[in-house]
Length: 424
Image (cartoon, rainbow, N blue to C red; front, side):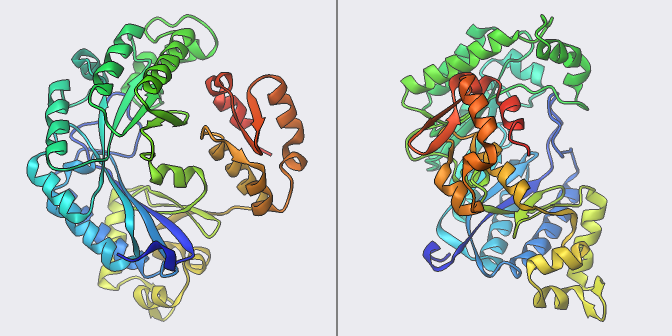
């Protein structure tokens, strides 16, 4: 790993591990149960993709690596170590890079944690969701709260000093005192970071079949039968902020809280528009003002990566390897995206980049900077969004101070509406 000061361009890596023991009832992510053989083939192909794309990113230095899923901790510890070794050999990685792996209780053990530690993983993100077993069962989780405690304690004993715990509120039948109990139990453990999301009932999930009508009712201001009412959901959000603050956590994004200096660097980079490269099926990327995603089919992904490894994919008279070695990433995306397993390549224009700057930056409590907006786009913020800013500030949804614009407490509760106002 090299010093981060030698390179001008910063890059974040996201590795998608789509496997899980079983799909949770609320999950709409690209994830699936799979046999060990499929997982092994996938890791081999992911290693090939790392090698191919690493050669195209010589002007970048990797500041963060994030293994997301699915359940990355379902892989064998040695497989994570192999992936990290390939990243180190193929990319320039900063010596202080933040390296995170998402874990589910019930899939961790001492051997895996030792592999993670030796491979350079320095941050764990553990998906607890609730401290009540009946809520975990409702969600379709594979673990109990007791198993989470065992895994959390083991991670601490193995020397992990940067741990995030994921939680979900506004569950069907959940009362404010239930949520308070979960918050209290987790805060007693003093993790460095807590992500506290409100349940989203997404189409295509078992929860949508059960509670989709309830979700629509709540959105329209009605009285849902199973989901908490909007006022209760807001009360849970305020309670989380209050309890976190009392224990020394700072909310730095709508749903994320951290002890001082323990904010998730990977997510902050995403909200601030740092270039990121997704590896694995369905993963998204933003580089050179180009947005693209990988093939979302497991079968097609495996076939593609095998072809790259065997040199059977060609571009004109050159093999894929020869062609990739001579081109820039942007050039390949524009001329032969199929060689990079890329779908939906979109060149973002100035208007789209302004939109993303606003609705990603406003998710953070520090908001967006007028100065940075002008430096990036050569225009004053008021010159582009003056009418919208005036309206939302007068409604008490935005506040302006010290050259920055941010959501108010009331604005957070209707953030989806506010962020949509910045679409040009």
